[in-house]
Length: 258
Image 1 (cartoon, rainbow, N blue to C red):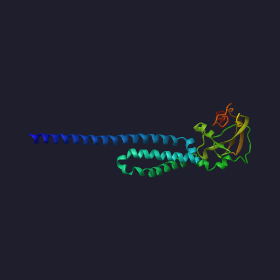
Image 2: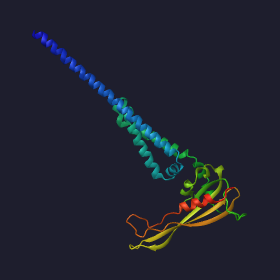
Image 3: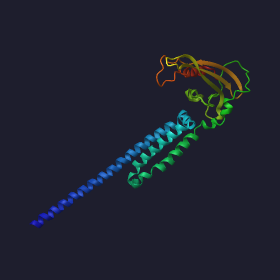
Image 4: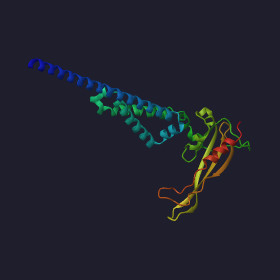
């Protein structure tokens, strides 16, 4: 009788152990599936974010021309890829998780390189000295007009001005062949007063010069005054009024098109 009970107890113990093993196996499988789902969600979010940046010429242009932004973007992308690889391949790469940073960095560097050097404005940048040079222009017309697509350049920085990205997409030149009208922007900060701490208060004055690029002809120019600086200067404020971007955009859109 004792042998019978001990044998039954051994069978029950084995069944309990098997159930524990099955439960642990199911929990491990569920954990892997959960990590895979999280990895796929993170991958989708990363792809959406990259696609958004890829289709934003303004963001891509700034990343391409400001090295600190490029470094920050690459590092963020690297750590995002590390996390995604960890979740997607945790079961396979569990022993090698600490080595994920370097392949992720390589992937991120390639993605950043592609983002920068494949953007459509990259070919325009090679001709920036030509676009910002106002020497030798003639004036054969005293009518305001814009012909074809527009490129807005900043004479001081010799870069595409932020105003360019505020224009409608169908008016923006994307390649050197599309550049028919050049709008040169030159903004200066004029002192209009001072604050209690002795710092100057500035108002932005911008001058637009419109050029018929195909004919190397000066068309017209117009000045715009920005917003007034704040009446009180706070600790981290610059004391500079707003740039008259809205007024300049409305003016450009109102010019007759040829």
